[in-house]
Amino acid sequence: MKYCLLLSIVVIGLCIPVISCGMLDSAFSGNEEVTLILPALPPAAERAGLPGPVWKVRWYTEGTTRHERTIEDKAFVLTLEKGQFTPILAELDNPDPRYGPYPVAGSIYPALAVSSLETAELPANWSGGAAALAAEQALLSAYGGSETAVIILSRFNWSRLVREISGMTYPEYIDYTRLVPAILSGTFRVYDIKTRPLFAYRIVLQKHTPAPGEEFLSLWPGRSAFVWPGEEGVSVELADGMNRFYGTTGCITVQTGGQLADNTFFTPYSLQEDDSSGTVKWYENVRHGDCLHHVPDLVQTAHNHP
Image 1 (spheres, rainbow, N blue to C red):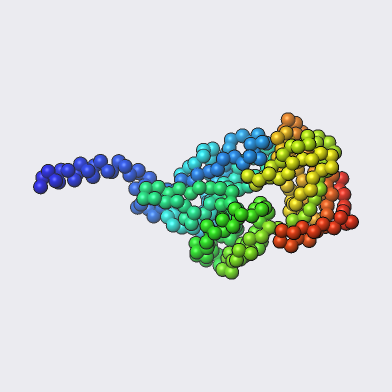
Image 2: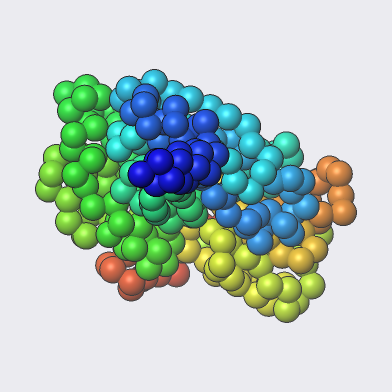
């Protein structure tokens, strides 16, 4: 009997060191240590020579209490309220305004967490970041306050939303003004995942033009935008706002708004300042699903300045 008691004490003594202080604290406080795993730099950011990466990470506790950290590692540990809904968003710190902004990486806790007996991991990716942006907007804008928002958002199928976003052609143009109210109202359907209106443009550069055959990447990781054909320029579909495409030698910026693209230029990576200019031709169009109808006789040409 004494031998059995002694053996039990030895076994318990050997097991205790396996449990970290953080795990013990979490167990007694109702918190959970979650390892956020950050993605690699987007290819567009690599082409632009973005240093780092340095991430600005934010998340929420007690509904809308915001927390922020600047992270330079590929992963770091968050202490979260166990099981309490929060979006987690990671934005790349971009010191050069000539490039970016880059997509937000992110995830949703606890819906997208991968948990085991000893660990909980939360992989952050780009589709998860788009979902996290929707979750953050919903959390901060719900009419019933944060408590009501947390109840609604905790019941939402975030895994399905991330899958749908992953299959979109232009996830960087998601229309959050449609998506967020649909999530909060409880009437969400897959048809609520739409892009903002897209317009057809033809980019024609006049100075510092890239070489014909140069491939340009979209800001959205993993997608090629176009191959530069030469003097005739290239046709693209864009939403209003600032759009950038990243080649091997430089970046094309197209600022669109209203009916005219009022600013477009090519910035070679080797230049510290840019004084180039370009032309964007705008085509009025009507978009029905994946079909884009151009009206060529309504073409307007804007002469732009950097």
